[in-house]
Length: 66
Image (cartoon, rainbow, N blue to C red; front, side, top):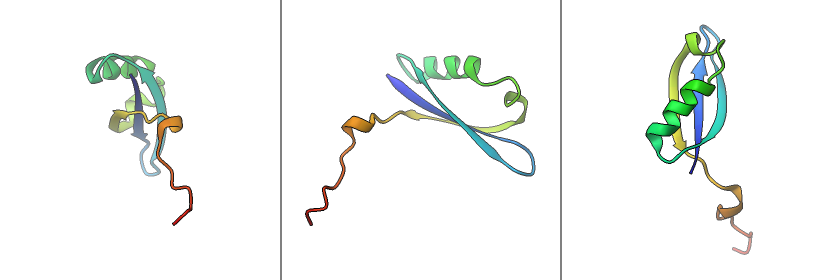
């Protein structure tokens, strides 16, 4: 299953780093994400969000035929 991880980092000016990992469950995704987080971001991180990544091909879109 694909998970999306978003890391908020920085001091006065916060920035976001987003990446995806392929894992069996949330625990494994967090472990993989911790290893894949860039070394320069890790000390500045103050918030990490984990969510199931949506497959753009399976997202429902309105076709505009209201």
